[in-house]
Length: 312
Image 1 (cartoon, helix red, strand yellow):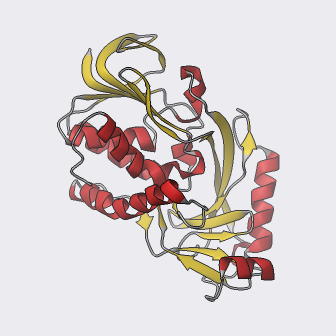
Image 2: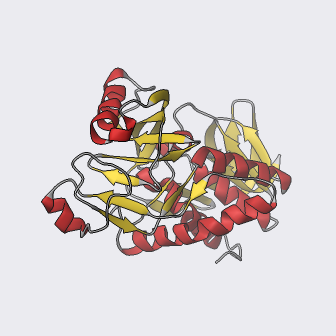
Image 3: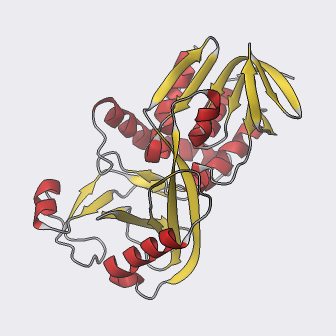
């Protein structure tokens, strides 16, 4: 089997890069191990460059992603693929006089927050990462792309191999998230857990103290813990923290019904998008901002491969 580009990892970054390449006529093979704990499947999909504290080039990258998403979702909609999203803004609630001054919080709270002293509204929003990934994969296949469920074991001289087979590619893109260490990339897993409730959601992502809320499939997404290591699942400690946070901080959620809980391993480490060896490129270390930075990352990867970016 041969391809112009082999993309290893079909999270939001790998799926978007594969879609953008296929859209431009590049023969792409997209491989994914479909491991439990993939960050995209549990992510909040927050598009909040300012509340996330980005600055410099990262802030520019985040703002590019925020501007690109409405266009991308419109492209997918034309293909009959709808993805839940919202761009009404993001809010940071001030819980103390110090926070009120630091955030310059003046707007009234958009949603009841116990102890809230006002809020600051920023440009931003959210997109449903799991739904976006599924839409990108469907569009990728429609464009003639090849998707393989495979756990890649190694890359040697343009040959990508796994237990059941192998393929040759001119270029290889590694978008393997928290599993980058197995390819020698400087990244480590940082587990995040989130709670899904049936209840009234704020009008947009709302940061308050150590956590946040946003709308998700007619309910509320409550996030998130941050814990080192590969421990799988949502344990009692994480579930208790999330439940206490939602119950104690937001009056409207005191009687909210439990819907579910999710977990994923964020790829923590220094952000790197570039060439690691001849013909092999990597996009790693996006942390909790993988969805926000995905459009910028895909654009940068296309440039590195010498592929015209007509979405610029």
